[in-house]
Length: 209
Image (cartoon, rainbow, N blue to C red):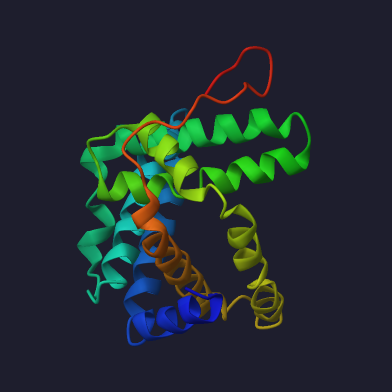
């Protein structure tokens, strides 16, 4: 599926849903800000519970949108009972990407792209665990990293334009991008394999994925 097809689908999928998506994003932002303001434990609460649970919920919302479903407010809170696998996946992706980045920026970018589908995979397969989600993401992105990178770059013009609208364009742009990347995941799903891919060489000092 071409970039143009992915984007065209995304525009149709978010049509009429921008208002509810903005409201969901606003509620998530307000709750995250309030949680981070809690003395002593705020940043921990956001990092461990609130942030990953909301991230997984957002992924599920956009997966549903690409299937023709309109989200509701309560969908934003649907993943708090799965906060631990969401946190573990987010944490491991961040750690692995950081370790590869120690070698240089480009290896970090490549690995970040390699792990980019992990949360989508976890959202659709909540029992597989973080490591398996990451392994399946690596398998899914094999041979598609440059394709994903170019897709990401294709939004730069919109992002620059949004700056000239005092950020108002992001109300539409973020759903547009999110739906496009979700469509990209859906287009690659047939290549997900059940087996773990071969182990990789550790990026630094015997740290393995």
